[in-house]
Length: 549
Image (tube, rainbow, N blue to C red; front, side, top):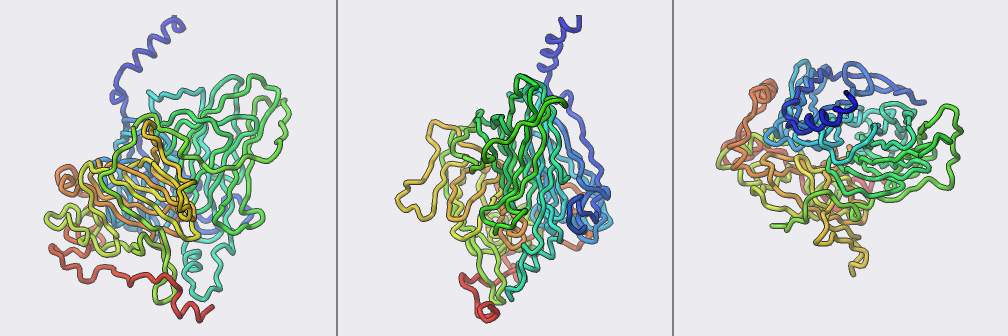
């Protein structure tokens, strides 16, 4: 009887709205220092973990649930948590962007994020204060969809991170050293998969289909994933379902996520290896580090031999222009913005990152509160000269051209949105022979983090349909700390109707003596005297740096 009526019962259950089964997924995290070498052959360092442990717990939820992150800060500095890729519709104050959407959580205090999960897919959670992501405060967030169009018989998560033997502050000091004597790569990182030096084992049953969720929790390098003798079928990119695309290898930059389906062999005659390769075409080669590889096992039978890896392990760029999202025709842009991701020098010789030569500095008042202050919230200058703020109207379609003319690549992430990738090309290709554009009858790939390689440009579009304050920044932790950030203030008039900041958010600001109204410095007019304001960046190294060299 169970066998006969099982399909009918399943059909009835699937017809019931998922909100009936919605639940509160509660995580109680004490953010603590953890001294560890993570099992690697390197000295231990002080990192930032949860509940005195590494790795952090993986968070699983279902679309329609509410994610509750109860955070107690046991550090000696502030902290925040960013649920990367979540739209945070009407909850911009839970986005975790310190001094943009909220005040940080002070040491010795607690704070709760309560986030309705309207999306499904592969995401991650990481610290968004003091570059704590670099020091280990990061974990996957998997949101399952009962009505997922792509079915599988099982799934695995492959979360990859770089673990440096030094803290972020040590590497930042090396980056800002004007003498040229410090090398930030002097103590390079090692590779971790799911928090460990060894890759986990995949157990495959012949004929079944498996979903593998690839999560890039890197702070700097790129990495690739491939399985000997098996095709990978891409079905999701950054939380957005795609039309199936078969590939041999998937390359990911920091903060990107990809789901693939893998069809198991029909027999148990052999086991196979899969490969996670860390590299960086923008990084100096270091033997054993860049590139480096961790191999895992795809096991069909304990008695089967391991098939030999034949030839070179595949390696190729991720071809975003050949992948279509399941839904969403190309949008027509209402206006365009140009962002040159470049670097420059301050008069003291330090080298900083910028969008259009504006290096970001946190405002004295979180931008969300300025956006909720009537009369001044429509003027970008109210948010301060170093926030590089752009005010957007509700539902206008914004086209952004990202440009990297330096030797640096940049994985650029937009909070609160996904964007369509509509064009890519090379800066020096004056004839446009190597330019690729999305055809008008195609659905452009949508994602929240795009890699802009050195010497390339990328054109993306998004619709300003999510009132709130949203960061856009480079997801290389070094570049973000060096100022490669900016702010979109989206539909501030509508924000005043739909954004109701909880008292708990305001209380965190009060503990630190931070204003919760007014412009960048808390004034109720266009007087922003005393706002963080840097000198204009210089294109060339100043004399102090030249003399040091």
